[in-house]
Amino acid sequence: MTEPLRVLDLFSCAGGAAMGYQRAGFVVDGCDIADRPRYPFAYHRGDALEYLAHLITTGDIERYALAHASPPCQAGCALTVGTNASQAWGGTHEDLVAPTRALLDASSLPYVMEQPNGRAKIRKDLTLCGEMFGLGVLRHRNFELGRWSTARPAHPRHRGYVRGHRHGVYRDGPYVAAYGEGGGKATVPEMQSAMGITWTDVREELTEAIPPAYTQWIGSAFLKSRQEVLFA
Image (cartoon, rainbow, N blue to C red; front, side, top):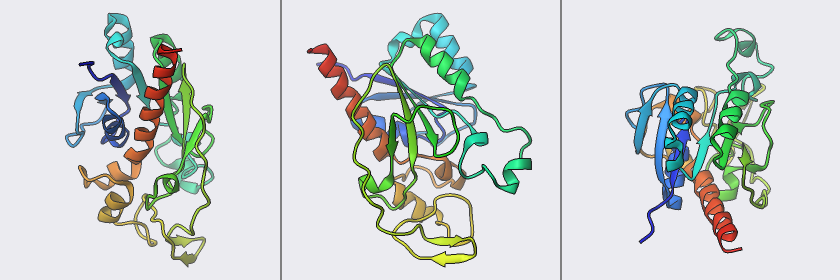
């Protein structure tokens, strides 16, 4: 019996991406600089780029078939760009997209790099949305694919508004706002249900997570593309 392929999950947060890859059939190892006791798989606490560099130097990177990275890029995030908070909160915003890409290129692995909508400088090889998977969030995310490719799925029309206040106007709708607090934004149980994430009830982790359905789709597409190359 063939052993499952292994994914390296960098900047892993609480494991939204990881769970999707596991459901697609992968073994997952995570790495994040913060303590993540709710992360559901094998986990290394440390600087993700330092850890990736270590794996490359030692040759242990060869254990992996794919790398997934969600580097912080608050300077280019649509939720902070143009707001007063983005000009002052936390001082200089961290943008690790370019150094992450450089190390991913050095790893020689196929990779997936994820970012929210905004000004982050990644290729938008894929854009996924909760409506594609019947979820209760929209949560658009862009993905740069390195050393592999797949067809873009159709982006269905949204069924309505995201519930909550925006510019002083309250609207109801079929989706919840899984970030921040107040103004009609989602409660923790609503976020868990809307994204399909049950193993953490920490608001900060939920607001940063991507729904597992996204990476389950990506992982399955990667396995299909890999099979096509092997049997071409």
